[in-house]
Length: 167
Image (cartoon, rainbow, N blue to C red):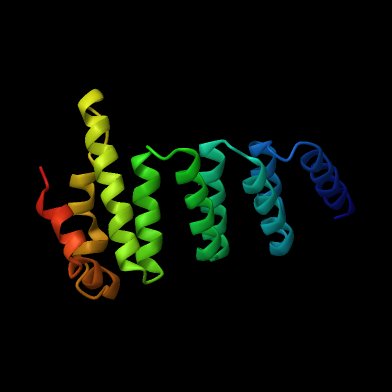
């Protein structure tokens, strides 16, 4: 056990020296989670997301927060990703779902609108790219009749206009 503690301390020192090193951050996050040191795990992802400008690191950080059940931090990570990569349709799509899950349906509809608009633009250049307008219309979360979030989204006029214009 002492050896593992020494390894954790060494990894933490390495991360403190290089707080944008995403692979090290995620290894350290996993090690902390393995020994149920969730506060330390959270602090690693907090530091990474403050310091990193790598979209992949931000998305992986959002996934780490999701593992911790911290939807507020998931939204912060994805919002930062949207700020750094504003034309990324998948980031807007994910932000839309986070906003919907936290009950902010008008903001969610606006984020989904950005997602499908940027997706439509991307499809003009990359015909084999994901079509988020179709993905949104077919998202199984919207088909779940018992899901109150889906009902709120489906009842929002701005959201309805997005899925009615499915290609």
